[in-house]
Image (cartoon, rainbow, N blue to C red; front, top):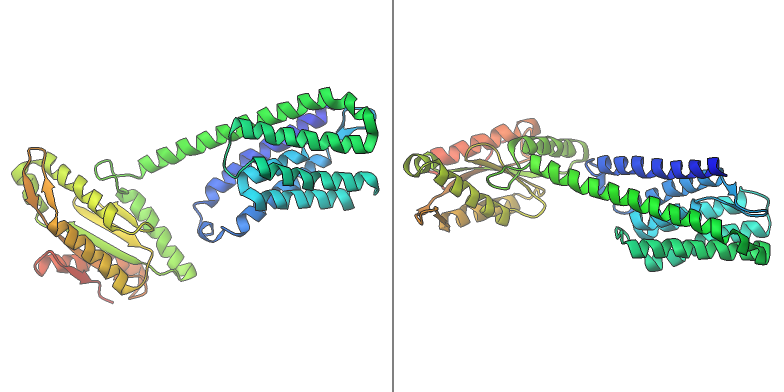
Length: 360
């Protein structure tokens, strides 16, 4: 019994740990953007297979009673992937129990029904992504009641004798999975915070050059591989050196900080804005229509022109920016950044406070 119980816990721990590693890596892949429909079903199917594996290591807890932790994968499926995940896991477990596991008879019907009923009741008390102690305990209480009801159907009043040991096992499983999932969740949040901090420019709050070039390279590959076109805007503060020379570098930092806020408010939610070094900024826009890119660039230029940059001593400065923009499908994609940078240079050379398009 203890050997099989240990194996069941090992399967759970392995599933949760490596599943977490997989999802963290998957979210950064190009497939993540198109996975909203199929990923929950895939997750549930994987959990269903894990449930089948646990069935192969069932263990006796009484004279006529054999159990495993397969229902736990259904609960995890609901928590991780919602109704599709829990449904896929329960259907796979039920089908395997009915057609392939053990002798065909009443136990097959009861075993298969156990998985489906567990799912139907768990979705009433547990929601996707909500790891609350009371709801988690209630979900396992539901699992326990359903399984004990199944034993009552199969062995009658004798099921009472297995309640104490089964209660200990189910309570231990609930605590183990809750603590592990909470640890993984906290670790993911901490890692995401540290990763975001490492990719941010401390002054403007925008992405830093290293993060931008990594994101830009990924965006170029998406355009090459999947034809997902995009726009690129590069901008530079006009006569920024005068600000530093006249008012000092702390004043320049104030200007950069305020410009970062302007870019954050003007750039679309799905864009990627970054400080690309010094007083130069870059924005990758997930839109390929030229009029949309130009409209965003003009909005930035206009807002900066009208904005009064207030220094720490109350001094108000009026500044402008020059911008260059390019489109991933207009000209060679591998030279897009250089051509857009050339367009920015032309905007500065031709009078500043204006927008120029990258050549094809």
